[in-house]
Image (cartoon, rainbow, N blue to C red; front, side, top):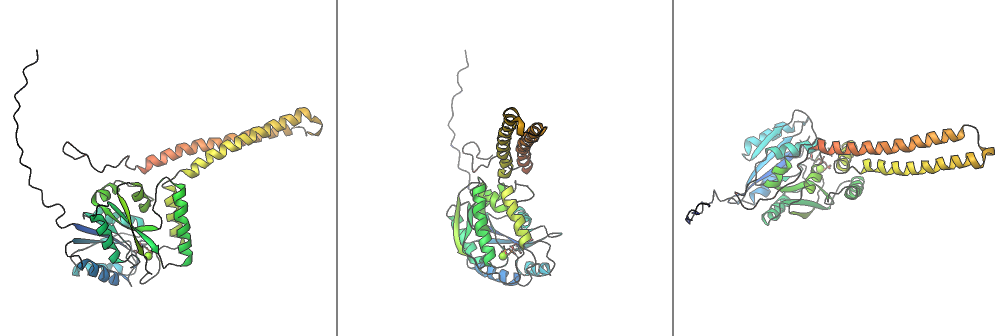
Amino acid sequence: PSPAPAPVTLVTVEPEPEPEPERGRPLISYVLPVYNERDGITAFHTELAAALDSRPELDFELVYVNDGSTDGSLELLKGLAERDGRVRVVDFARNFGHQLAITAGLDLARGDAVIVMDTDLQDPPKVSLELVDAWREGAEIVHARRRSRQDSAFKRATAHLYYRVLRSSTDVDIPLDTGDFRLLDRRVADELRRYRERSRFVRGIVASMGYRQTEVAFDRDERFAGETKYPLRKMARLAIDGVTSFSTAPLKMITRLGFVVLALSLLGILYALAMKFFRPEITVSGWTMLMCVVLFLGGTQMLSLGVIGAYIGRIYSEAQGRPLYLVREVVGGDGDH
Ligand code: UDP
Ligand code: MG
């Protein structure tokens, strides 16, 4: 017989006092990649600081990442850090590229929300505050979408086409016409830090994460000073990274091609054999054998490449080491995960 159940005592647990009003004064971090922006960086900082001053209810932190500038941008940034206590400067040992500069900034940012924006005044500082408003209304990721842009016709056209091709070749719902100008909630920024793949396409990773995403439209200004740090070569590399990091479609195409080639080569073999038996008088000696071998080898080789491709695709996605899933919250228990 089981022992009598212990008497139940009801204890009223005093609700714990809220540990610091969580959203008392939210801290907003800015991640600001800088590569040879000597002529514009001071103007950028002045405009950003003016925008921030219009929001005394928020705290701000500015993480400038100097991506191996060679034009003295670093000295200017150090000057900003001396004059403005909100500024932190990360100095890269060399130029690692825009996407890695953003990544380093995200690693260091401590805010309740993190905004990534360019430092050439193409992403207007005022708009970043609209991102904050959307965040305070509950969004966890806020993309700034370019309603219009002032770049060269070539850049506009290629970007326009690219975002549409990218969208159709991957499963990820990458928002159209958005660069890296966006706001991430703390939770999203933390999860994003678990993605350590090398050739990264940050905007694609963020889009693939889920969470509550919204957009704020803005008109993209012209570069304030200097010229684009994305020459065609870098743009092409970023574009390829975007497609290859979210799709193994090219590999899958090999498999499909393999099936087609093998089917055609079987037809070819049948044709060669038929010629040999029914029209021996016009068949050159040795031709049948040659055709059979060439076609058979071609077909099986193509198919084998597809099989190898399928495994490479798997190795690739394992090597990316992305988190398997992302959790927004766990309800019940102590609520942590
Ligand atoms: N940038 C960077 N490292 C690079 C190239 C660019 O940190 O290797 C920064 C640059 O200073 C700017 C942002 O990334 O703040 C976007 O670059 P850019 O404005 O040249 O690109 P575009 O707007 O022309 O696409
Ligand atoms: Mg720019």
